[in-house]
Length: 174
Image (cartoon, rainbow, N blue to C red; front, side, top):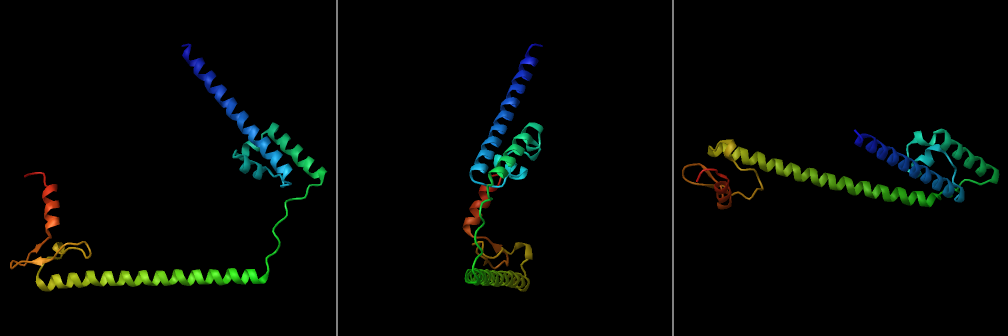
């Protein structure tokens, strides 16, 4: 019975050290945000410190964040400058590049559709030929699998040698 308190004491200690590490990360993030003049918000602190938003609203952590926000406002820190507005030429260039990429994607799509149409047509032709020759459609090999379609005088489908070897090795009886 003495093992149970030892285990719980270890779990409590691990939880406390994990909590201390998270709070230290929050403090580090707050210092960096103050140094870089980044606006301090609860969500941004939680995201940067990789902690839950619940933790940043905990009473003691909330006090630290509020103090950092107040300090940032009294210093008159300006938020980080946003990038200047882009010129019309930059936007036109980006638009032209995007349109070229869309055109290329559409051409690739059309080429793939054509390949699919041809493959489907070949399969349908293969099935139609099987009906004309009298081969049951279940015995016709799929297109493009490297299987020969030698028809002996019996009208039966005989697979290529490679397929025969594979089928022999897969049999359970000799």
